[in-house]
Image 1 (cartoon, rainbow, N blue to C red):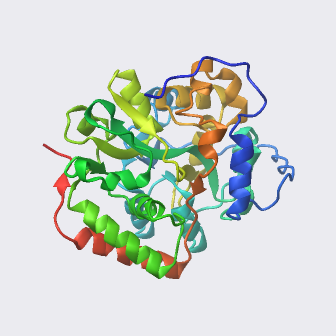
Image 2: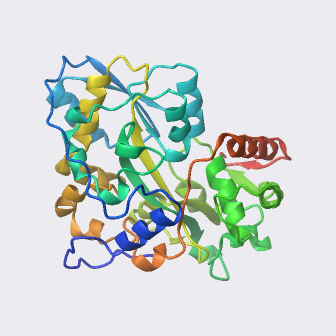
Image 3: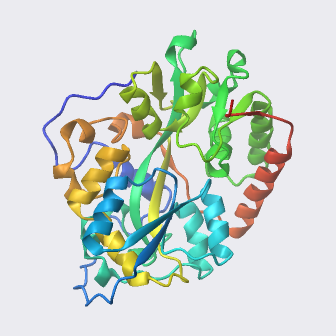
Length: 379
């Protein structure tokens, strides 16, 4: 099992920083290499805050202690609403449902920006944006971070019951090993499973080549016949591994840290073909009635001490440079949370699709859901 590394002398940047910059450049996500971030304008007087702020997010994706601290300091009650998938969240935003702050990945919010669904963020009300690492700012899907503020990032890999396998797991294609039939657990998330199938075939996880995508769909439909689809409302894949319903699952560093904390024989493997790097950001819907309160909340989250608390309690990395000095060394040097340089060598970032490609992916996903029968993550 991956073990927490011993604390090391802190450096100004993590060993993965150079790889991440190169990765962003390789997929065209940086607008300029080495450019200095724009100076943060001075804050303006904040209008009266709302009594309630609606936060739309994954379940258990924000420590309750942080929500309580915001409520206590600002006197604003948090209405924490959850989605099962981020595709569901995007659909609800398009349908006009009202939220104040939403956590979304760039591959989904880029189109929402284009369609006018999201509000511009007044950076005068978010002065703590200065704490965000330059590696995560001013990317081409949102130049100047006019509509989004980076929140979390991390890796995607495979979780394996090491006591129930006979040969090491090293590749995405191991999900299809015959001995794992009926013991594979998958999250039913389109921009997770389609890329995994593409990577297992040796293709880019961002492929829009029709022939490659059809091959990936065929592989996914085959895997579906022998897999458990985890209920999206579940917070982790660890329970289905812990009770033996699954031997292998795809998941994230959070799952790995949970297994480590519970002393379970579960290893987190980053496949040799390369991990899938994900990221989430805060966005504010255009129809939010409490935009200034939303910006106050985001600014609160970007305080160094608050970001450090979130990293320590959630086991997800945040791109907040100012928080690093406050994060416990065993967390900051934990390769599950901040992966080493070697783990980033073949990593890919999921990038936004154009309208035609998104329609193609939507069609593939509908065909996947309609094909055959599959198990369920529930007893």
